[in-house]
Length: 86
Image (cartoon, rainbow, N blue to C red; front, side, top):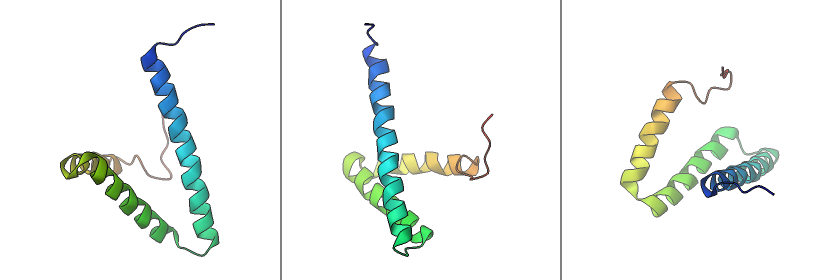
C-alpha cells in the first residue's frame, strides 16, 4: 500500500466533497424545475443562499473579494455554456 502526502489526500477529499455537493445541487435544481420554478429564480436564490453563508463564515470583506474574483472570471468567459477548454 502506498501513502499519499497529506496535502494531496486533503485535495482529493475536497474534490470528492465538491463532486457530491454538485450532485446535491443538481438534484435540487432538477426538483425545482420539475415543480415549475424558473431557472433564473433558482439561480438567484442559490446565489443569495451561498452569499449569506459565505458572509456568515468569512465576513463581508472577504466575500467582496471573492465576488470581485468571480466578476473577472465571468468577464473572461469562464462560465459561458459554449466555452471550450484547450
